[in-house]
Image (cartoon, helix red, strand yellow):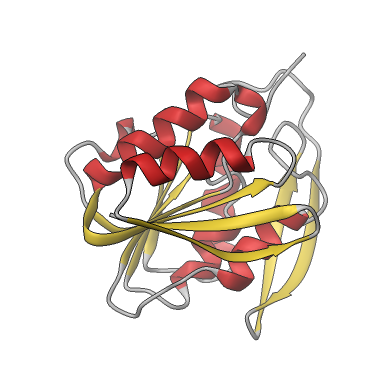
Length: 195
């Protein structure tokens, strides 16, 4: 069984172009087999991108970027975006999507969780985490986020209401000064934790 959070998906490569309208802008994305949400924009990511908090001068980390929706949408509203993923196919597709959407203020790096951004700081870390990778991965994302966030920086995370929302919110409350629910719908919740 291949998972989209493994380094090398072992499913044959198929691609499908999708077009979406988000936050008043039109985007095109190549989606790929072996990369999360093939052929469509998943509802959790859609809820997150429509509600994420973004400021003009921010430097943002899209953690586990997949084919790049969060980072590419954010790039229209912030100063700079770093996108990372452990899945090599996702990294390659996300790089193509940067070109297709004419994004100049973002880059994609390969690696596990925070490894590709060691020693760097961000105003916000935004993620639709790989819930099926297990609680340890979710825990690592949340408890390590403050080390990569400026003071008052924000971790923004979307999670299924019935698949770990309570767990994530609890973890965030232990590791952040303040936690807010900024959106909910379609069986998902979006939380923002202030560092």
